[in-house]
Amino acid sequence: MPKFNMGFSEKLISAAQFVANDDLDSVDAKRTVLYLSSLASEITLKALLEKAGKSIKEIRSRGHCLSNLLDDLGKCEIQAQVTAGSLRWVPASRLRFVTVDKSFSDAMVGKLLTGEERGASKYPNEVRYGEHVKGYNPEHMLAAARVVLDWAREHWNEIRLKIPNTPSPKRSQNLKKTKTAANP
Image (cartoon, rainbow, N blue to C red; front, top):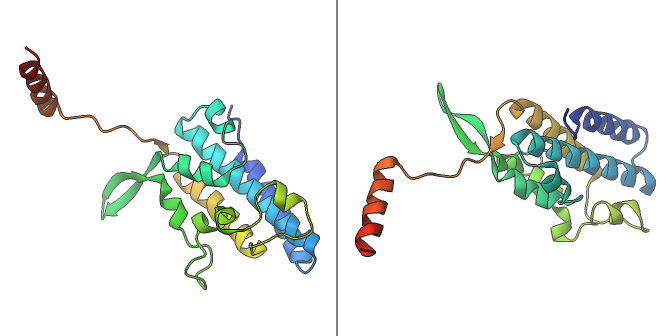
């Protein structure tokens, strides 16, 4: 049974949407939407990494750092159609470049989830505590959580850890010959 549950992420997103629909004028409402959205994204990313084959121990070692989880996702791959009828394994880091709000060219998943690198409040502690939360648009973060969850569902059955490039048999033989010749 999986350790990280996307159903839980979905409930967190629903709760954040409920708060956003009720009141986004108060600091507490903004903080709640940001926190629940970030937590939903964290759990979804961890579920993807687990599904790809990353160990629970490795995933947990990342803590709550969304940037590190996105970096780990870059070590995974998904299948994508590159030409009509042709599937190819591509980096799962493509998720970083999915647009959350078409009104803003820079409102992409990667930029939003790594906002603390550009001065936004650090998730989770600076989002939970303190007088002010800096740098995040709660509605964009909620949309990002939804996009991450939808992307995860779309690629759930095809995500895997990247398979290291292995030399072709002919190249391996040439390497052996060179090595043997150099070391008689």
